[in-house]
Image (cartoon, rainbow, N blue to C red; front, side, top):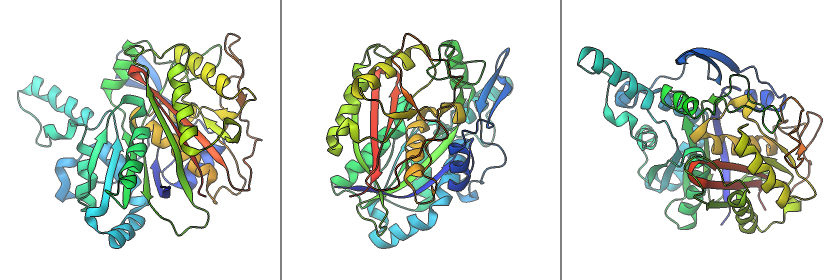
Length: 398
């Protein structure tokens, strides 16, 4: 069954609307990546934060008041009318919610615990449920007043890619007629200090696939799709294929030969009924760590011996962790959108110095263009700790 991606709301360091994000994305704008101190002791690190005030959580839902849920609300407000139309069409019990996150409200929980240690009492706003991984789905279900399945998947950096897969499964099984799906993660000290302890965070803007790459930057984002069984749009965009694998090679390091990544990409192609040569663009996981970039380049070169236009968008957005899969799928959606009148693709931003030990890939430049005629097929990769791998294919609906 075709899973139509009928609406998109997103917010990240590139902007707060489709138009703003798309303009900065296709321009290769990295200005949202700025150095900040105070997160990791004795380090000032580049990070991709969302600047400015965020939408306030309604007073009646005050227990849900976390930055993570504010980012989620910003994305949801952009597609509120589409969601309400789906509710009117299908009923509140036929609308599902599937999200990916890795942070939830853990920053607020950390602040609450810190105050408790200092003052022996929690702040009035503290509620332990804010830090539960299911909290974003509970908030969105309460705000939308829908009663279909509502849950969160947390598989580190593949969380929201898996959320899209799971949403499609709810449609295929007939459990829902529409699903609000995507991901959200906010900046927090726990993840920044954790990745810093792993020596995985770069002190400069990340430099994916370069010989000079030195690690990731962290970002925050929310990206939400309204996925349904049908669309009235003649230029519809759909999730055409998805593949997942778990090579369980190591708790944090990827399988060095890229076998798990290759398996996920092949599964996505099989599900979509496509051959590698039909893929027009590949959004790489591209974290700019030594091991990930080496593994992914081997897998991509093996699957696409003739090459495929590809890029990592993380120098512009940072690694948004649990939101990355949905955010980068959203970049594919924006590339296919009728609003992309110049048929631009996200460029690969780096220092142009390839690693001689890695197979060469075909990098997207600002001059490259996507075909203007359907069908067009775009792939997005997400890889996570524990050898968890997901590949999605988004394209013009048949």
